[in-house]
Figure 1 (cartoon, rainbow, N blue to C red):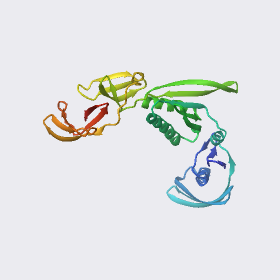
Figure 2 (figure 1 turned 60 degrees about the vertical axis):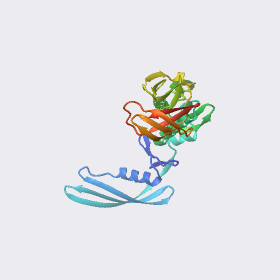
Figure 3 (figure 1 turned 60 degrees about the horizontal axis):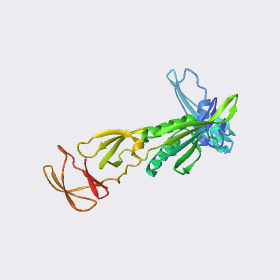
Figure 4 (figure 1 turned 120 degrees about the vertical axis):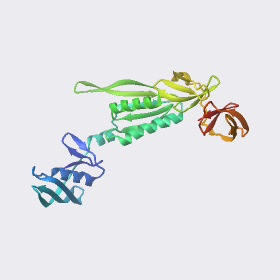
Amino acid sequence: MVCCKSCYSLKVPGTWLEFDDLESSVSHFIEQSIEWNQDVTKIKSKSELRQLDPHKFRANIGCEGDYQGINLVSELKTEVQIKFQVCQTCSRQAGGYYEAILQIRTKRKEILDTAVDMVYNELDTSSSDFFTTEAGAVRGGYDFQLSSTDKARSVSRDLMIKLGGHVTETNTLVGRKDGKDLLRHTFGVRLPSVSVNDYLFIDEKVWKVSRLDRRRAKLVLISTPYTQKTVEVDGLRNSPILDSPLDVQIVSNRDSEYLLLDPFTLQTVEARSPKNWKGEKIEALRYGNDTFFIWN
């Protein structure tokens, strides 16, 4: 059997199979090497392995199957010789191979952190042939050198869909192979400075970002008449983003008349609930010297 000395992947015709350790790779090789009679059913096998040296395992193999209602049991013994090579993925990682550059840019740290975590999560959950050879913070964002152009394109689109913004794709000629141009792609992901559930102060009113769709944002007014509108994300770049709301204590109420404790000034404030309000939670936002109540 041929095994990668770095990641223990097993070489099979046309590809490499990933395994967590050498014994798992050897066990799979043995299981796939057993030849069963085509009339035997309910087959199963179990191997007990003993490593003799770095390149050799001794295996005791218990085999069991059903042949025309007769239970057959057999024990086999063999030695497995291992030849170590380096799989393509490990070779590429060691050589600093990458096909694409992913550039994430945004003016807001929280959004950048979210985007970077999304990329690392994709790297952690994908197969080993998708990896980064270099990644790190740069001025205004974060860059990744990625092993797959297709995966880089998919990740960049996923960032755009979930966080808004837009993606630009460019390529550079880096060589030729077998008469074909070799291109390295760069995906520039420019994310907005606002995110879903942000509260913005626009035209003396507070609006909540309820949805982001690439370059457009859907806003909802937090007070009556709860107007909704869709705007260009670029038009929000100068809109103040308010801090997270604080819970409001209800001191007393009669019908729709409420006496609330302002969590910012610690003073009581008279307020009227929206028509037909049946919620139990009130929150407050602060901008300048004004407090805005959210009737959830």
